[in-house]
Length: 333
View 1 (cartoon, helix red, strand yellow):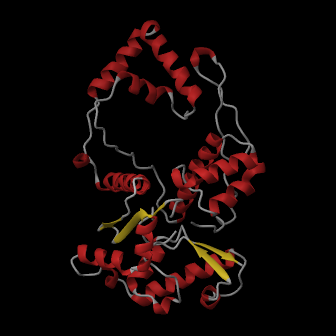
View 2 (cartoon, helix red, strand yellow; view 1 turned 90 degrees about the horizontal axis):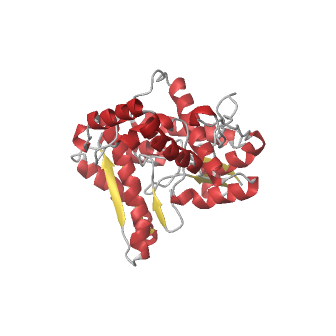
View 3 (cartoon, one colour; view 1 turned 45 degrees about the horizontal axis):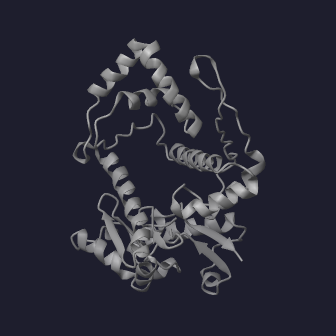
């Protein structure tokens, strides 16, 4: 998605931001912990009911407030001013709501069960303090929590040497993890994190007076991602075939898109757009003529793709749209 100075498509470059209702399920009621003393150094949690603020939170979610990165900071600040909630509370709501939507999607697709344990790259050897934090800060993330953890860690060193020795042993036995050590799923996760870093770096490049863009291709999903400075994004928008041609070249000039029947893809795109159109208040089928005449707005279409009647789209663009279905928002004028 495009930020103030730069743009990046953050999901496998294939379509983007769902405003579809989650069936009859009510939105989650996220809560946030605050500080207060308990025996043993632990703190009680004061639950914040966000129900009165859900209309505002969901409105900004549909506008693209889906993470706490640079491109969403202005919206988070605006929500905080409107609702009088701390920005940290808004950020926690985003995280919880996103996780809740992902869980429902997995349950609907039959992919439930125990979540896979994530493995991260560790460039440096861990320390007893970090092992202590991993035990002490479960479910906590505020600055007061970290401050209290530091006090408790120093107390543990003298008051409970056996426990402190356990953290020292854990630190010594915890191995470092390189990119080569990661499994396929974790490598995918790490690649997405690195792409976000590249996207953020584009802002700094533009600040220094340079312009450019980056296009990356993921052979595991046959999808591409793109990000860039303002002029870099304009160039990609005016040369929409570049990312698709690059992906085809990396795939060995054998478009994976051809493996799927184009008519099947077109049917799926039509069904998806009809559902989003109906959810936005439209009747019957989505009108591509209304889109052409600017009587309806569609947001979340990735760089390199122009939405039009599926019969006029090739398999490549159809797959891109379907893979970004969660980011696409239809708004009636």
